[in-house]
Amino acid sequence: MSGESIRVLGECRRRGERLRAQGFGVDQIAAVLALDHQVSPLRLYRYVHGHTAAEVTSAHNVLDPAGTATLRVGRLYDYEGWPRTGRRPPARSLAIFARIYQTAARNLLTDEVYATYRPGDRELIDRAVHGRCDSTPYTTGMHQRPVPPPALSSSDGGVELLRAVRAEEADLKRRELLFEAAMVFGGVPAVPLLRHLSPHEQERLSNVARSGGRVDGSAMTAIEKVIARCRSLDDAVGPKSVLPVATAQRGVVADLLDRGSLMPATRDRLTRCYAELCQLTGWLHADLLEFAEGQRHFQDGISAAHAIGDPTLLAYLHTCASNAYRNEAKIGQALDHAFAATTWGRRSPSHAVRSVCAMDMARAFAMNGDTPSSEQMFASARQLAAAPRAQANPSYLYWWSPGAVDRSAADCLLTWGKLDDVIASVQRTLASRGLRNLDRAYAHLVHADALIARRDIREASLKIREAVTIATTHSSNRLVRRIQQSRARLRPWADNRHVRDLDEELRGLTTSSEERAPIDQGRSV
Image 1 (cartoon, helix red, strand yellow):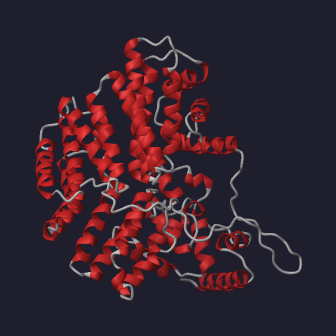
Image 2 (tube, rainbow, N blue to C red):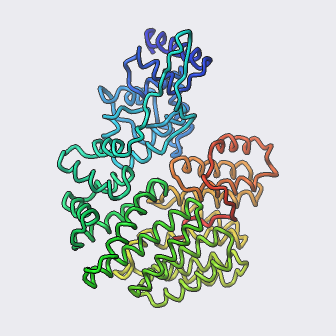
Image 3 (cartoon, rainbow, N blue to C red):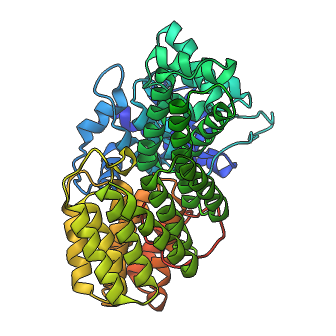
């Protein structure tokens, strides 16, 4: 570090300390320092804290969930120099920097640089918010001059939507189409989902939803594409940003079904879309611990699936309802829906849905203390999942595979008390390729519970901390509650150093619901 850099860093450190003593927050201090230092936001926030580049890289490598510890000082300077020099920082690193600097990752980028990230990366950046959010002006000194936060969001939803569309789409014609479609399908959260549609599909969606245009094959395909994108986004970032879009789309499809001029084939296809959207919104509500609302959506979906006589969709919806009841400790209702799912599954040509139903039944039996029946259904689920994938398997079961059966088995094995088998199953899961973050988090938590049963407190605490890291970038309230339940098992060791370190990680990690329920079974639908 040059003498000039040392001088600047020391000056910023002292200035920041004085401002903090007068009640300024991190973002307010950044706004003040920005008046005198024309540097990138990423470097500016390092100045706010007075950290050297070596200190930041060391902290980054400790917090990196990948555990690769590869960031070096030179690469940090590259990130801080972007876009004039160097290279653009990855979204994952920005989330870690936000944690170090106790701010929102979005504050570490200019609008122009933020617009260059892919939709999935922007979701990760938007989710990474740490520290106190400065939302009120502060006053200092004799002049009582307010210092506003650096970025205030507008209360005008149309303005926010326009900004989001501008960041997503450069072409003026496509920007207009995207804006119109997003207005119908949930506003700002819909923008990254609708962006993947062609201009013609965006136009058809807007016309059909707004002006009662004819529901043709292009409009149906666009609706189905958005449903698939919603599922993918839920996997990546969780339910909070997906639910408004899925709910708006469900309303649009319901309005289309109220028309009396639909051809029978089109009506059946729309009804199937409506049933799938009911399953999706029901799942999203349940993942936010809004179980009663989730069950209402599942029941609406079951009615729609009955209307078109779709046994595969009926089996899946009953499985979702069973899973939600199991998470509420309502084992009677869970078993009722599990038996209904199995009955409809027998009528389905899909091996995948029958495997899902069998696995759900295995979990319900395990929770009810019926180990022999649980083991029998688990064996059936594994055998059915091993069958070659066929056209009869619906697209919404894209996530189900023999590996998914193995992941789900860990929950049952834990209930059966087979701790060695639990650990072996989790190790296979974590070593598998393409594992979703949510599945990884649940695997760590099941592993932690097995280690707690063996009184290996140090390793159990470390596994829970792995899940906590994932929970900071995913909006699943069920995951947060599941983490809290694993921590509750560590109460006898509350004074243990590793448990105290875990408690530091857990500060601020809360759900938006106060509902309490037994151990979550992870993602089984």
